[in-house]
Amino acid sequence: MSQFLWNYIPYGPMTIPQTYVMPAAGQDFMTSQGDWLAIQNGGAPSGSIATDPIPRYISRGRDLAEWVHKDFPYQAFLNAALILLGLGPNAVDSANPYRTSATQGGFVTFGAAEILDLVARVARQALKAAWYQKWLVHRRVRPEAFAGCVHFHMTGAKIYPIHPELLESQALSNLDGTGVFDLYDTYLLPMAYPEGCPTHPAYPAGHATIAGACATVLKAFFKESFAIPIPVQASADGLVLAPYGGTLTVGGELDKLAANISLARDTAGVHYRADGIEGMLLGEQVAIGMLSDYGDTYNEPFAGFSLTKFDGTNVLVGA
Image (cartoon, rainbow, N blue to C red; front, side, top):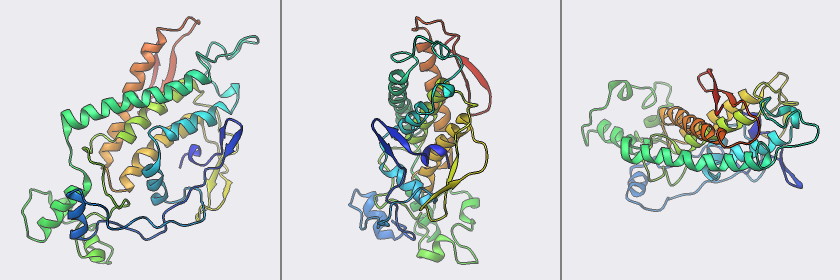
């Protein structure tokens, strides 16, 4: 879990703890054929998420899945930007032309105003790129709908060309009784959200594309090797934060945040892993393109944005 999902957020005159109302344990939705079919036909959910009344830090996969159920598009990265801006000038990237000035500071360019603007701006551009791929290229079916094909194939109602690796998987039926059929008497995918998946194609994931783009922008403006002060970790019950006891860097935690936000949608059942991984890479390319364009607009002496891509390679952008 990224420190940016646990650290307190400086929000103007306030400081916001990252405790949230979480789903109570043991809830799965759309596990009956009737509920599944109703949702496919545009019906209302038959149930709702029961919540634990005590706000907690994120400590379980379902907690994180619910976080990305209710967030606004770039919320995690707006929070990360505010946290990073609160770390002081030493956390700013070395290429920032104002970093060593005794008489000037960045604001409209190379400062808070630009960073907060670009995090929001790149999120919208990332969504445009994702929606083009979703509708005009791939049109990948969502997991809940494909699970319906699995269910009807396994029960003999229909025959679909589904790979045996899935049909013979222990996820469907297992000797220890933990397969989905063992638990629910159907082969449908248990969902974290009562309403199931969004009504647009799966690939790539919008959350993931935003995550890749926003993380890349923040890596461009902040020093990736800067150590996070006093890293923490949530207790198993999510009630307290305890010291982590190791060194964590800004770059590593931004990569981790992008993965957390992307793969949490897989945990919810609304995406496949490839939707998240490839979405992050698409978002990264969108951000690199935008940073390259912005590099040509500065009046300040600027050597370009240096950052580490998700594959570990270093790039210089906008020089």
